[in-house]
Image (cartoon, rainbow, N blue to C red; front, side, top):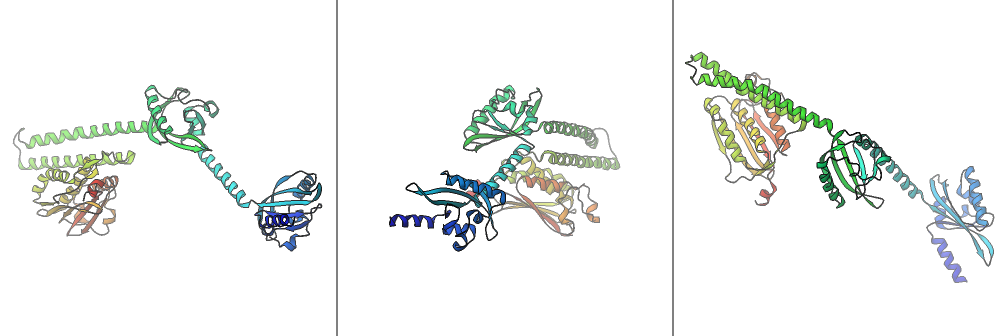
Length: 484
């Protein structure tokens, strides 16, 4: 008997829950250390008090507690959640339970347990808050969000999905996406392939589809899918963005650029062609003054053609970014072609040009056409701003940063106040020496855009009257770096 009492006392004292032994009237006869901790009172303060007083519940809760106590005296158990304030003024959440203690059919008292569930309640509250936030984000997301099961059946969808497809949530849930016939015939096979990937746990997209709404109207969408698990259930989260207007704008833009290019280039080509024809002498002899005028026409036609290219490039960049055909390319052949294209102008200004490249120069991953445009702009500027009889040097080396190409000239240089702005669109140095050179300030801006698209950068070192060095840094392909 004594051993049993000691065992009970050990369990009572070491329990994590706050335990109180009450007499049949509800007066506290004994408490453990956990009860002292939870209620913020010493044993002496707790023993002898009525348990409703210990709990310090509100008047409206007191009657509930007392009713529950009477239930216990009648032999029934209860679990009652309470929000209380202990003696230290701390507000805590507890779960109270109680049961009748009997021996040989005689009631000895009541054992009451108080479990501190404050952290659990706080976590549950935070979880509910997060669930509400996620529900709001899902429901009011601007893109259509749909949950499918592994067979492609609708599980849930947001308001944007209802607007996109024209079906209400109730109409769609439980139905298979393919039974709704939202895909065009040539899109069904592609959609099945994407579903198979999602079922295998692979995200997909971005992919483009033309869907048919409930009202029969087509809508172009960009889709992405992600495998998710919600409450242990494997689902597919699909996001669809309506790009119908964007596609229309792209087509209109392409048509506009094509028409604009044609309308600008056709008369320009004719003007330059006739001027060159007359300069050839085939239309008759020309006076020295007439030749000079025609040379100006040819020169200005070339310059205007370059301006048209730059304007159209910037319009395209603003609308859709640079179109890039990325592959491994070698820098040296590109630079050689650029130098060859500038030979006439180099000879005309009697500018000496030297090229210093290492015998082995690793490839870069880039767009060959854009890199040609980059180095053409830099070499053209170097020639333009270098006085007659000057020199230009193109040199390259490899470093830990990648491949470095420098275009150095003995030209007029750039003032320190202009340097921070030279890569801005339409910026032109306002010094008298710079303003005599024609241009609208687009070349370096396009160079900067091209290098951004390649993950590279451009720098400049310059001194007025002594020339400039434009330094291009291009990342080298990883395979080439590994082989060094």
